Figure 1 (cartoon, rainbow, N blue to C red):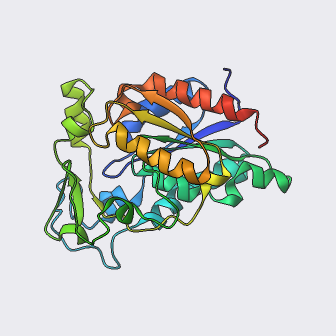
Figure 2: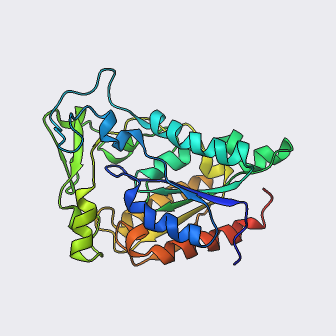
Length: 282
């Protein structure tokens, strides 16, 4: 496929991350003449989490005045990039959500940014689809917290996480990142990326936007994922598909970080998805 010159990709990164580990993927897209961006999400930005020195963070400190950033702030950060691409440049955009970034990708893909809505108004560009890569597919009306936690009100900490002094009201960080997030990377590279991880609060903002019904959606199942096993990914897809229609399904042997371990495959997946939806009315 020859990429469309007006196609751009915006990546919504996972919790506990900076955009840094996504740069190899962004660069690989750019090498195919596809502009690509990964805005930094406030919920994983140590500078906004009241941890003191970001180079030597103290995860036991009190939450910042007014509370930690939540999903609304993440959506606003991605929206700023989308506004430039769509409203200023008239670009068509595929939004990619990785891990928690699936929540952000769904919520940020509002009707006014969708290509079909814009075309009806005589406007160019807009979001043409969402690709979820080992990402959360959260039903409308649910938050990440309400979807994954037991309904009886108990609080379960996943094996790859720890919470600090304030428990679920404070910050969580990743444990054994080399095992859970970077299991299919060279050990030295896995250690490098593990050192760059940050922290995040519990995500309690609910999905209000039904992008699943409005846009073509695809899912890249990560079959080597030790953080969210493929069966869980498939379960989320099945649950949502029953409500809003089938996802275009792709599969990868990668672990939780295909942007690092399966970079070219990610690019090819984007290209194939773009080709599939390119014939649909924008």
